[in-house]
Length: 185
Image (cartoon, rainbow, N blue to C red; front, side, top):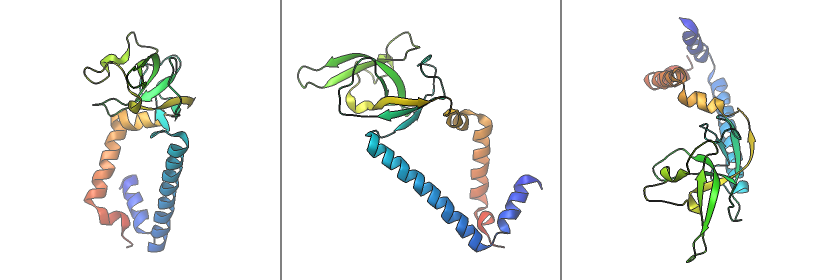
């Protein structure tokens, strides 16, 4: 029957109390992770205090798969800082360096122009159509630290077809046979 069948049989053999204990433990782990995440967002002032570098655009400083820790303070953003930002029409945040700062005379607000260290041109092509500068509300945070290579787990889970296939198969089995995984019999 294989390892899937053995796994199903072992789950079936569990008593309801064991299943409930495991479910509560899993719930506590997930809840703890969410509390830690929310605490980090409050402490750092960033909606996403941890991001993974997904491209080679910041090499040699940051490699694909590095994890960046972000902080968003009220201080003005300066040229040379590394920021993470979102732009309209793109789901994935971008990690790039601020190369120019522009202060608007009418409001005093500061807009920035960014560029990847490994790119030949600035990021205006990535911004929304007609947008020449990046306003502060697009910026998720400033990079304040990093862990090399740890983000590869995330990249592999989202990009590798075999992992996607396994996750899709698991979801399909769970939705097709929901009672199989939680029956006591």
